[in-house]
Length: 294
Image (cartoon, rainbow, N blue to C red):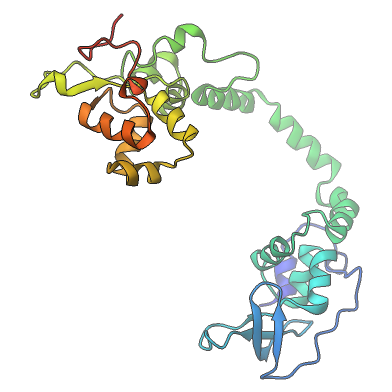
């Protein structure tokens, strides 16, 4: 790759300043092909060849993966460079990509603004963003067209800086109609309605249905109580599903208030798995016939 051509696409900072090493020189370890080196990420690697960057560095792979592509051995002065130098400088001198350097930094727990990055951005930010360009950007950000876009985006997402979107009147509509209709009435996206309904523990709207099965086999439960008791018991949905014999997806729908009612048989299984009484899981607003009181 032609690194000079690649870096020339960046803004007006001179190349020699963007790639200047602050804490060099950096020397590669004195090893040969077939020697072993300890990599800070991949463990013990066998050197198979050398890189072709401006600072040549050993590349290696494990014996188990002898046909895999060799990778840089993160050791020695390269570790010191990753800790001290900017991402741009390491890319240039070692001939690696930005994601590679980012992965190295994360593995070594290097802060984003290390000494090299602070020097580069601190000294040259004024060159990268000249005052006249900054003034134009600020003017565009405060233009009526851009402000209208921001207001519209906040309206869709139910996020207003100066007022509470979910007023008691709007919250009272949740669960009284389907989520798509509620979103149209209150003026936000369907995702915002679903999130708020679940946050308040309100059951999803379902039209009255003629049940073909005996109503005595069904009962109205409380999704919020089910979730609270499960969490108090220290159980995940997967663990509870395994103990109760129900499917994990079914438990997820119960807790998300997708269903209004549950079979008595399933309630017994859940109560037994959670070591509680069935009455604890029932909705207090429901009567014994399974219909909700007004």
